[in-house]
Image 1 (cartoon, rainbow, N blue to C red):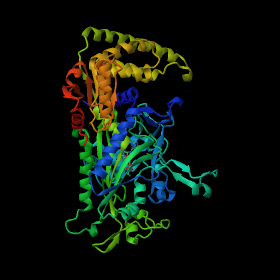
Image 2: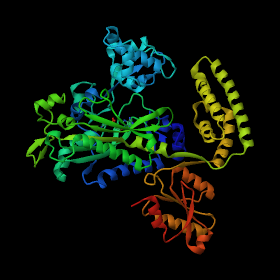
Image 3: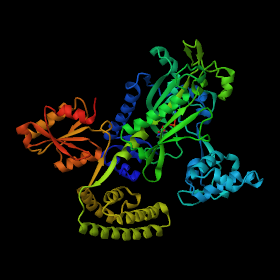
Image 4: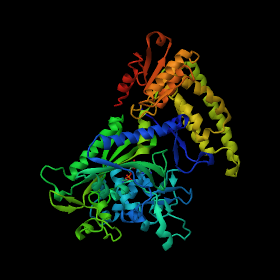
Length: 624
Ligand code: GAP
């Protein structure tokens, strides 16, 4: 079974060096993360897999790598400056801030239904249809939500609705005292050159630039350059991987939603429907084909079909110019649930038209665009067969690379009980856990006595949450051994509780002895491909061979040498970071020139000759 909660991934990431909080020495910076040695390898592998699938395995896609900062006019004409914003609301009591749509999504069914009926109120009251009919037309929670999102998210004029209908603050579970929704642009601003002018002045605006919120616009800017320099004909695509920045209102869920992230985007340019020749694929066919191709990519790298779904956006979610968008969603662990990992959009001719100087009046009207007097070019294409010039349409598969890395970690994470812990030890552990919970009660009461919250040594709310989580996990022992281990280390309510400090090493030892944490990452994604060990580090003959083997393997893959612990522990460490193969050099090797190769997933061990080893490793890792 893959990860049950994101905490398992957060804990593993910190423990083994996948992801760390950014700016840690200064207490971090809201939702910015640094990728450690293993995370950097994983990210590179995810991006390489995408790049290879797009630009090597096909002959109709070119790659580019564009500047992050672009002329501000790009973002004005793409629509981002005016509309790339989220509606946000604040609870005046708790000072918590939410994206209006996220707040609505977090509402219990009863509140949702009240909002839903409010939307239909006048029609029901004037007899146009009945309450029962409305409920029948929108039978599921998702259908109601889609409607409510559209109606109420940016409802600035409906100030008071959130209060009248007692919209719940998810942080407290109680109705909030809400402000009206306000628009908040998500683009980070900076300036090119030294500027000291006040915001909004002519001088300031002239030098203002934005950190790109998507990589796509760089591709559109280079449509003509790539077309002309590579002599492409439609259909063809341009791919790009790179950083994107969004000043998200509610970042969170670890690296799922961050303010700095990486995207992997393809803009696939096709003929508009009216210029298709007999037998050529339509925009709808290309869209369906890309949805399938992208779905297969995720599956080919190990995502189980039961946790990946295609979800066609309904009309209320679609941008006005988009003909269709299908999201690929992954079932993330815990409360996160289904979340978008990639969107495949049929964006018609909107993007290239938006940046073009010469666009027919009728097309501007259809696309709800103003004539672009800033552009010095028209991003069109000369069709030599049709002897016509036109602006191509585009299908856009857009995935997050950082979100993909998190997805693969969640899918790959497994805990396996390799040894049943002795019953007596489990009973003793339960008794100690009871004592920890009781002792925490005392600390909680002490903290509550202190009137000034700033002076409190402990946070009573966090302690209560810790007590509840620990008691629940203890009732599931021994299966929950690793979970408790993680909780004692990372739970906010466990910090600075003396008995926890004593309990930690015992739980840790038992978990290490009995539970194997294994990342069943696809070999292509695994940060380390092979680890080589000598059976005994005090035997120079074995050490020499093992070091030589790892040097040889390093010619074609990430291979490491390790002799810092006993063989069992070395295997466990590699399992935990997803290393597919381990090679052990033992005394027998000196006689028969063979080594033991152990498979991470099956734990099977086979003897292979040193001569055959590189070939066998390549074969098993599916390296071509
Ligand atoms: N050009 C289209 C575009 O940018 P999007 O749905 O906003 O579309 C595409 O983003 C993908 O980028 C998402 O499916 C997600 O994987 C990733 N993404 C978007 N915002 C993100 C964020 N704040 N943190 C991490 N990944 C994000």
